[in-house]
Length: 335
Image (cartoon, rainbow, N blue to C red):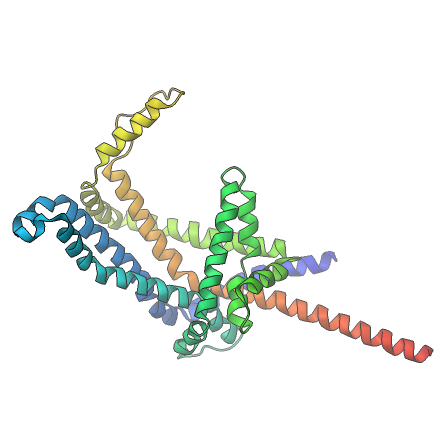
């Protein structure tokens, strides 16, 4: 029994390092698939916020431009008409990201252990997911709802959300590989696969988290800081966020703190600044790009984990079948 656990432990690390190799093997093709979903979301959000802040800062100038804009209703309608194309681009980018999120699993499932395929038919993989789009959306909503339900008690104890992340980690692999399976059965199947393999799953989740979310993100932030890229973006973000009513926010926050029954000593006069928001926005932007472009790597890791667990289940079922056949044959001989 101890030997079996040891082999599983070794297999997780083998899968992790082989997934790194496999990820770089198809990096160029994966990046092409992610360019619009990632930067479409990012640039759309930046443009929407920029236009919103510009509108807020120049509303009097816009009204003086034409009497038509004196009516608030006309002003708001025109504003949303201007924003509509960017909202559509944002929705399309989110939709494409959802599709490639699941189709990458198909890519690595079919190419694992083979020599590099020069031209992957991503259209076929994407269409496979699109044919089950309704079930896919329901599965996303169910998983999100479960995470939310487990997150609420996790505000006090973090254990519930960790359990949810572990046992639902193979939901989308099950959805991609196991035909027309219902969303509920995807969740049940993920729990079934992870059950008995909890420790290897936790190890894989931690490896992916620390490499993609912590190490690579902080490495890129540190590198950009050294070559002054960070300063370039932060300065422009700070100018942008100076349009925000930061002083009003601080005043409201101070009023809330003053109303509390406890005293907070050494409270600064300015609790938040445009620079603070700019730095956080910059870090979030870099983290989003790094995490998004390492999505294929994480798909590769968990696809391989799915194949490992599924093959073990097949072996266990075949052993049980062999034992039943042997017992039946033994009874016949006795008779």
